[in-house]
Image 1 (spheres, rainbow, N blue to C red):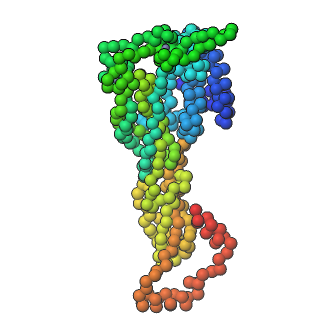
Image 2: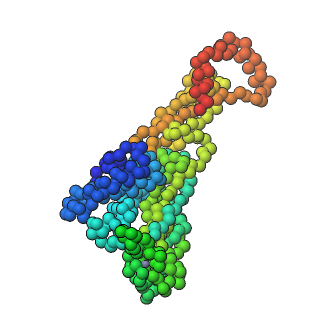
Image 3: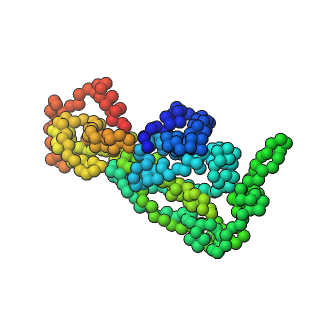
Amino acid sequence: MDEKDYYEILGIGRSAEPEEIKKAYRKLAMQYHPDKNPGDKTAEEKFKEIGEAYAVLSDPQKRRQYDQFGRSGMRGNGGFSGGFGGFDPFDIFREVFGGGGFGDLFNMSGGGRRTVQRGSDLQIRLKLTLEEIATGVSKKLKIKKMIRCERCDGSGAKPGTTPTTCPQCQGRGEVAYRQGFFTVSRTCDRCHGEGKINSHPCSECRGDGRVRGETTMEVEIPAGVAEGQFITLRNAGNAGPRKGPPGDALIIIEEEPHPQFERHGSDLVCHLVLSFSQAALGDEVEVPTITGKAKIQIAPGTQSGKILRMRGKGLPLLQGNGKGDQLIRVQVFTPTKLSEKEKQLFKELAQQENTKPTKADRSFFDKMKEAIL
Ligand SMILES: [Zn+2]
Ligand SMILES: [Zn+2]
């Protein structure tokens, strides 16, 4: 499939309101539905594509994620696996058009309004160090969640029994009744829309089809993520009751405070303390970087408050392939305990013309302002 933008696929602007998104989807879905275009592969692809675009843009969380990560970042390998693939375009169609009605219009198989309950989404907070964010990292997570009951294979029925078709709706999950001139449908109250009646519930899951369990999942965190962003693992959430589709797992990124670096977007800020003589004479000093130590040159006459910039030593950008910078705030250390000899030397220095401060000018204050990040 090509990498067309979801907004483009639906022919809407990036700030489109939910109603507008739905309207655009409805129009296109009607046009490209395979039942309306039998044997037309292009229409089928198109139908899938608009379904996928709608599924993402109609879900505020997914839409935000898409706006942040783009489409390529969300599919791909590893942790984003599933990403946005794996949609059933017919499910989406049924959801928007409300099952029965339009399904029948198109002679869709398995009509009726049978309710299948989807499992709920899981929200998992994942703490990452700046080092992990700098390189990207693969994490194995142990997660407690609802999983399919093995005893009944998720059906909720005692092994050896099968739920019977609901006699009230004949398994359709909805019942039609007349209201004036119209025939209206409502959810069947006998089976609660499931179409089936389970008179022998499984003893393990009490008919729910799922039990509490634990799974391990591996998630690939791309380099450059930030606090509050999240990664959606499609279908990795709680199992749905009685074979209902699973929810998603949202991995929410949390950033651990770093002992040396402060993050400003993709830039990293750290402090460097210099002695009087290092600042005055210049020196080569070792500084930490997020990927290890590095040496930098301190120019003679470096002022306290000066910002040194190490280009490309910050964090990678999530999108694109650039990197932020590392900013080093210089502070000149004033000694507090001096021996008699040291005091004497400072007194001698103080007599020298060039050790007296020059008048602070405008640009000095501007630099100080810049220094207070
Ligand atoms: Zn069971
Ligand atoms: Zn029923």
